[in-house]
Image (cartoon, rainbow, N blue to C red; front, side, top):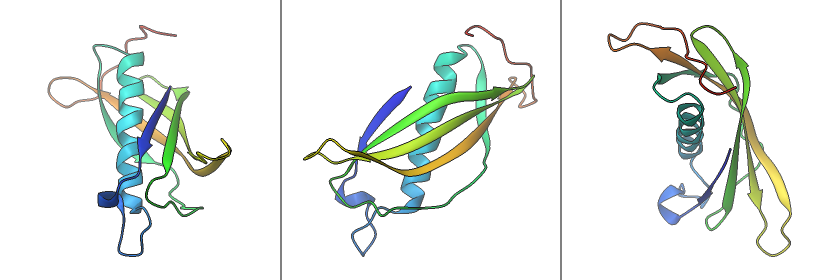
Length: 121
């Protein structure tokens, strides 16, 4: 699943670059959307990201593409690979700026782990 985000002035630090925390928040949001659409009726929470390493700077006005892809599924948890790239609006070139694996766990109404219903393959 792909999602896009425009980097606006309120997302920037005092040097004019994207705050890393905003990028992590967006990754969490787009991945949550992907897992929720893939497994309707399940309640997911984020349990972790495997690696946080900011490789490229991101300025205001940049269009970011978030690609979330199911990577691994267990009994109660599921992992997605998220790749973030920035699009050059003049050339159309895409450059990968960040990637990580994010893991979600499925919970019941009492907040305890429960098996994931495999409603989509």
